[in-house]
Structure formats: structure tokens, C-alpha cells
Image (cartoon, rainbow, N blue to C red; front, side, top):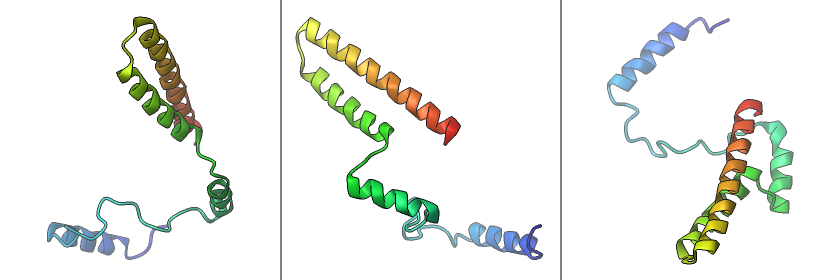
Length: 104
């Protein structure tokens, strides 16, 4: 059930937006600090303390490293091997991102 004043609140917000009240607010476009699911706080703390990172983050770092190595290679065989490694990492990342998108 909606709040009884929801229509009035929506109109007030729309008018303020039209009047430019929300332009150039400090922190615009940045995530709100301190917003997280309370149940995740313990998991977040354990991951932070152990230095654990999500697989997608690790794969992105490995991809960046592989691209940097590839840029410095000149030999055809070495470039081919690094390109194979890069393709493997990018495929693994795509699979991980898709799994996160589907399963959360």
C-alpha cells in the first residue's frame, strides 16, 4: 500500500527538479556512503580483513596485466601465447559477469 501522500510528494519532487533544486549537489553521481545490507556487514568485514576480492575484480586485474605484457611483446610466438591467455581471461570474466547478473 502506498503512502497516502505519495502523489503530493511526487509532485513536490518533480517541481523541485524542474526548478533546478537538484543541480550541482555535492556528491552528485557518487554512491551514497554507508548504504549496505546489514546482513552483509560481517561478510564485508571478513573479506576486507582477509584481503579477499571477488573473482571478477581479480580477473579484471589479470586482464589489465596481460594487455600490458602484450603491448611490450614483439615475438610472434610470445604475442600469440599472450593473446591466447588474454582471450581465456576475457572469456572467464564474461562468464563470471553473466553468472553474477543472473544469480546475483
